[in-house]
Length: 158
Image (cartoon, rainbow, N blue to C red):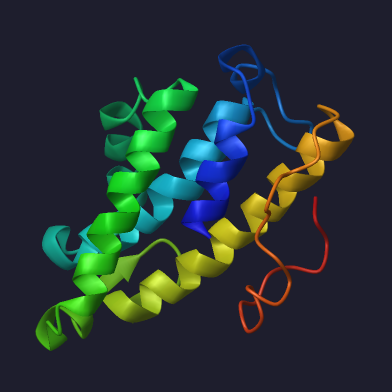
């Protein structure tokens, strides 16, 4: 899913990143960075102890300069590597740590990662739709339905 967001980003221009999406007061950049930053926040919850609105606001400030095709791609690669290393670490106490989360309530870090996978997958589907309908860009090598099998997302795209 993160690879899909990175590939989508790399099809865009820095100017297109500043255009608004039609479903909320966000730019294309805001949506794509959100797709990447929420999995990062879920992963970081094993260290921070939460994924609350305050954590989300602090993240938005921290990544405010992640705003070009290049910086978003680099950020996405780093987040993907961090999550991959975490999941391969075998660190069961961190996996099982219960954290308060805006999404899900009191959940383990692994449960939170799964919840956010669904959340970000939904936004990625929205971005694919906007690329095609709003920007006239056919996503190259998009994440497929087969690759998202088992990931629950809302039926309604918008």
